[in-house]
Image 1: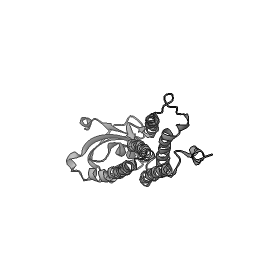
Image 2: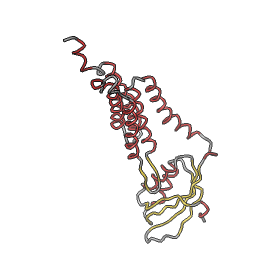
Image 3: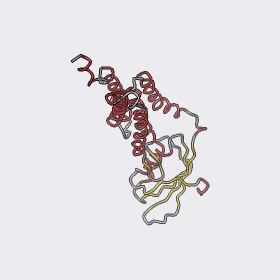
Image 4: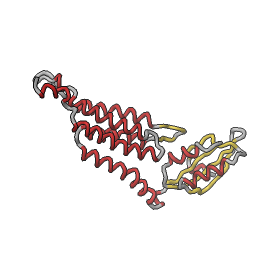
Amino acid sequence: MSIADLTEPFAGQGWVQIGEVLLAFLLASLIGLERQVRSKSAGIRTQTIVGTAAALMLLVSKYGFGDVLVAGHVVLDPSRVAAQVVSGVGFLGAGLILTRRGTVRGLTTAASVWETAAIGMAAGAGLWVLALVVTALHFVVVFGYTALIRALPHAADTSLTLEVVYDAGHGVLPRVLSVLTSTGWRLGRLVQQDSEREGTTVVRLEVTGSRETAVLLAQISEVAGVRTVDPAVADELE
């Protein structure tokens, strides 16, 4: 029995492939750590598993079927597994997107999971330079672009009218206004409306700011005593 016969079962399982899996593990962990520190869903464990598993699946696609190949009869298309990884991770990302009271949350997190899978696939394919570059670009986007958006002039601000229904007599409105100011929004006008539900108060708030509208609506809806918060047509503010 030759050395080649002894090593054949380990083809595609050498130090190079182990290094590619570990690279995917490391880069996915970095992205997951950023998500974890910022208290986002799909944190370090989810991102690390996605990135490492994507690398493994691509390596399986490249090396896992060598024993069944027969020249002229059985051929292999490694790109097919890679394509299925993209589709599968898309379903995982869709599950991270939440819709609540007309607001959509989790788009960035879902995109980051998709990105982590791509980085893992690149690492598994041996394209470690591209994997490193895309990981670096991820941090440019989440930190650099966030700072850039905050630095944009107020000319790019969004004007929004909100209708907030809350329990009367429990000091809810001051807490809502505190959320507005703490998230960088400015209050223009406040008008109280007639409430159709006993024990509740309805106000319309005209606000201006440059932050994400979805984040504002989600944070106001989480204030204790708030029943509903919905965007209203601006010209209905009396």
